[in-house]
Image 1: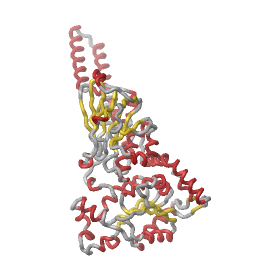
Image 2: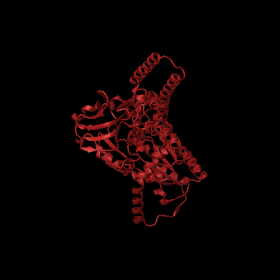
Image 3: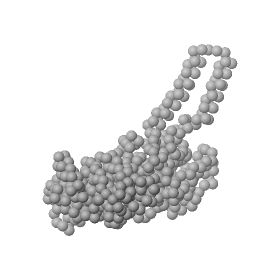
Image 4: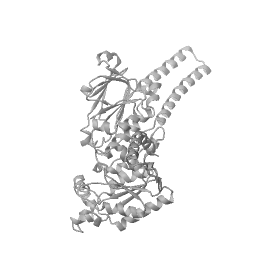
Amino acid sequence: MAPHHHHHQHHHRSLLPHSRKAQEEEDEHDDFKVVHISATEHWLARKPRSSLLRLLFIFLFFTFLLIFISRFPLLFLSDLSYREAISPLPPANFCSPSSALCCDRSAFRTDICFLNGDIRTRSSSSSFLIFSNSSFSEERVRPYTRKWEAPIMSTINELRLNLRPANLSETGPNCDVHHNITAVVFSTGGYTGNVYHEFNDGLIPLYLTSRRFNRRVIFLILEYHDWWVSKYGDVISVLSDFPAIDFSADSRTHCFPQAIVGLQIHDELAIDANRTAGNETMADFRQVLDEAYRPRIRSILLEQKQEDGEQGKLEQRPKLVVICRNGSRAIENESELAALAEEVGFRVELLRPERTTELPKIYMALNSSDVMIGVHGAAMTHLLFMRPGSVFIQIVPLGLDWAAETYYGQPAAKAKLRYESYRILARESSLSREYGKDDPVLKDPESVNAKGWEATKKVYLDGQRVRLDMVRFRKRLVRAYRYLVSTGKAGRRRSSAGNAR
């Protein structure tokens, strides 16, 4: 299943301001206050006047100062402990690190709310209570990273964030569980179940939002799924030292000093280093995957060694992995492709990921590969498992050029893979056996796509298979092989599958 690309045609990049910029702006305001006070004192010292004039001036000045503070209170608030905890997460310009409740709704893809103070959960009403020296207010947010897609967002639970005066804290629910660390709240609903969306909408944003806390963070999950926590438990354990909480099912009142509701997201399967506090890139996210999967990979290798005997002999041929599909967008002449790749000089592995396949096994196969080949679809998300400098050849069926480039081509380049797209010709598509050669389905796929998502899905995603022209595709294989040999990337030990660099 491919990502739901019909919704992306017009989306914009969100521009979240950086914490450094926010800090500079706060520093400017601090300077502004100091300059005015010191200048006034200097004027009074240098220009003596009558007591009446002096008193009048002081009265007017402090009246102005009080009005200024009341109009712009956030500029004068500070809470160093909170700022140190969440300052790497870029807030909106109008959000102060010490705000009890502030929501950044400026991004195209996501809303993020920052909570600070006496925070208590109340799952029965899908709400958080924040007691602070503030008046009553409420924010509502759906913590999922596809906010431009109204239909899918309507399936995400809406959280109510209620700010109440501190003197009413006795009326709130008593804390059943006290936490002294930050909570990050998000949903695993929506398109979860599709591996592309699990990484793009979930894991990469979760990394961006939580990594700065160095595991001192607790995840509160809406639309909680046991299978998701089991599937990605290895990754979750690298990001947090604490078990995740099923927000809706846990009726206890959990209390936190800080919380972030919603996740940061940059682009398709990508991280923009300019928008992170530590200039993190996809290489850093890949390091998290490496740390998560390494223990299981070692045990898999040990099992294989016990079953097959010693496997440590030097293997000179570069390794090529074909991601296989069944049904729609399958490669009909898959065995011919494997034979051709062997002939060119590769050792070939056919990988057929199933819903139940352990992710460490997929990671092990691709992390040790030099080339990955696959037809456009959600399984191409596994390009994230390849080492920088490896080759990714995406086979692009008819009518799917834009989606293939947007969802996997561009992210592959950002992940520093050597990316090539192989756009099939009409004769390589099974659709050529169902439609006449002048039919718009073959001749003008854009006109079919213009009819909408359902048409694209029915014809090109669900109704098409691929039969590669081996003469044509051989050129791609030869080019990849020559690149690997020329750069010295060919030739690794068979046991290098466990090395995650």
